[in-house]
Image 1 (cartoon, rainbow, N blue to C red):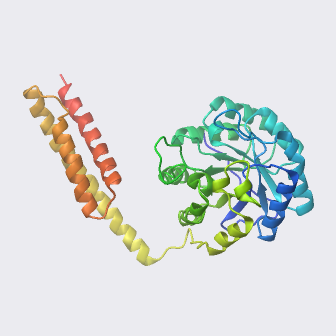
Image 2: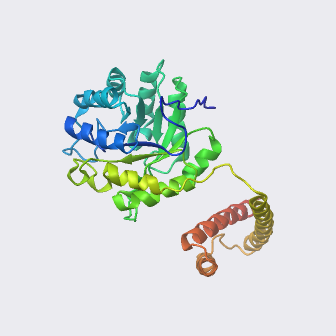
Image 3: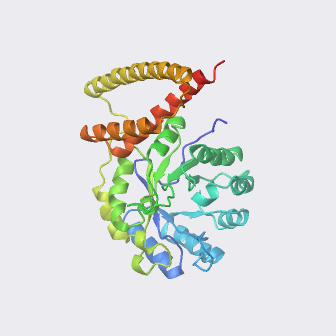
Length: 356
């Protein structure tokens, strides 16, 4: 399905990068919402976010104040002059948010992974003209992310964008959610007109990681940022560790280096030409390697040998990985490359061995 995309066209919001959406993880009290919004407005933020309904991993945690908090956001809009944004996960959420004139809706990572929930939201949005941002699903599945977008687009929504919030992992890492930047990069390649917002709060899970993650999003050409900011983050009712005060957020944004996404020179074109030539060389060498693999397959077939020789495979992975590290490349990268090469080699050898 080809997406019919229109600019977000947010009233009073410049399209200059980055477009910033900021506010607390959760709307807790009217005083907290208004205090944070006022401080953010003084810092130059024009779009206020707050979670009204909070999906929690386990029951018993704070799951948001619910519809009670929507008049607080309406107050932010009417009295402070900021646009408002909140997360929706059900038909009832959408209806309530629209009733209180919320300007931007976003759909969370858990919801984006559920086609039934996405379709319910899409059906509720039919005939509505509102910007909708879709977070990446919790698991690194680009097709599932695109499918979620297609469902919303099928409802007639053209002002679409996405939020990259990273991907869940069982292992403990530096980040709360792994960035896996190649996935939003590939999404941008396939849907170049789709605005992408970085979510450093959920990727990092720690306030000290917000600044470098904001910069990385800008370096990759993202259109905007959605950052959790609280008037008193240490006392926040949810995700306290990943929220910053409005003045800290202002400092982070002031220090951002915004690079041109289109500027090009003869020098960089020459360098890209060299990369193109090297890529061609890599493909030719891989083709030669696969021809040798097919010759090995013929030998294995004649001598009734198994396709996969574990000792040899381990030797290749270990030696090439060590060699790559010495040449300045990451061990994980080298393993990924040679695992992919081995997988293709096995596929081609199986074709030879199973051929009558």
